[in-house]
Length: 483
Image (tube, rainbow, N blue to C red; front, side, top):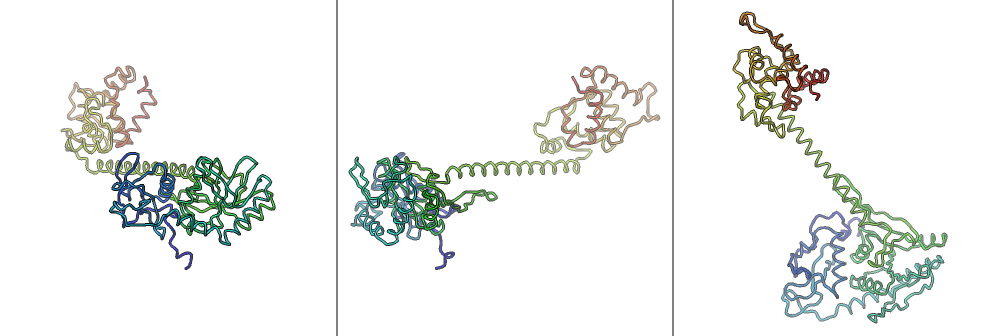
C-alpha cells in the first residue's frame, strides 16, 4: 500500500473536528469517580486529538489506584481504548463481570497476554540491533557510565523488578532507563514502566528506530504524547555524530503549532540534538526538546487575541457601514415635514446617547434648523423663508442656536437678507442683529444669551461637516468656547 493512501490514526490529526468516540458502544455512559456525575462517552472523549490522547494516558495511569471513570451499572473501572484501525476511541471494562449486561464473558487475563506479546517483541533481531546502536552511542560520551543491557531495576517498595533495555547513569548521579520501541508496546506496559521509574527516582527515556507522526501506530502516539509531543530516534546518522563529537546525540521529532489564517495547524520538525538539551521532568517522566504544550498555549492565546481583534475590527467596520448608510438615509429621506418620531429613530441609529434637548430645541428641530441653512428653505418650521426663521431664532428663546445658524448659513452660502417691502420701519436689520449677537458673545462669553448650545456639536460634525468646520474655525480664532 502506498504511504499516501494510508489513513493516519486520529492521534496524528491535531486539527480533527469530528467526534473521536466510536459510534457503536457497549459503554455509552461513564461515571466520574470524583464527582459521581454520569456523562456520555462521546462528550468525555470529544473531538480534540491531543486532549483525547492525554486523557487516555491519564485514565491508564490511574486505573489501578484511583480510577477516573467507572461503569455506572456495575462500578467496574473503565479504560479508554482505541479501535484496531486507530480511528476512534471507546470506553471498556478492565474486566468483564457476569452481572454487567454491557459485557460478554472473557476468561484470559489481559496482563498475561500483554506481557507475552511485549517480551516476544523484545527478542526480535531489530530490537537487539537497536539496543546495540543505542549502547554504542552512549559509549561515545564520557558523561555516561555504568551502561548495561537487560539488568534488573528493583522497586524496593513494591518488590517489583523491571529490566530496561538499557540502564545507565548520566554524570554519575542521574539514573536513566532506556526502552527501545520497535513493535507494538501496549499502553498498559508503557504506563507500568513510567510509574515504576517514577517510584524509584529514575528517569525513563523511550527511543524509536524511526517515527512519522502521520504513519505512527497508536502506542507510538502514546509515548509521543507522554513526552509533550516529542519523539526521540537513534540511527546510523546520530551514532556518527555522537562518535565525531564525543557526546550522545539523538534525533528529536516534534509537532510545532503555528497560526495559519484563522486556525492552528501543525508542522512536523526535526533536529539532531545532544542529550543535555532534552528537558527531563522526573515527576511526569516527560522528556522533550520542544515544549509543545507551552507553545500551543502561547499560539492559542495569540490566535484568540488575533481573532478577537479581527472580530472587533469587523464589528467596527459593520458599525461604520451602518452609520454611513444611516447618514445617507437622513440626507436622502429627511423632508421639510419630518415626523418627530421617525426623525428621532433616524438619529438614534447614528448617535449613541442622543441628547433630549440641544439648547431650546429637540434633536429633530436642531437638524431641521441646520437643514434649513443648508438648503436655503425652512425645514420643519412653518415659515415661508429662512429670513422668517432667522428672525424667530433671534427674537425668542432660541438665541443659544443663533450663532450656530449664522455659521451654517455662511458655510452653505445661503445668508439671509432684509426684505425692504416687508420690513417694519422700527425693526432692526439682519446685519445689526448679527453684530449685536457677536458683540454679546465676544464680550460676555458663556454669560451671553447667544453662547452656542454645545450638545449638538457631534450631530453637526457628522451630518453637516461644512457648517461644523466654519463654526470651529470661528470659535478657535476668537476663543469663543474657551473658559
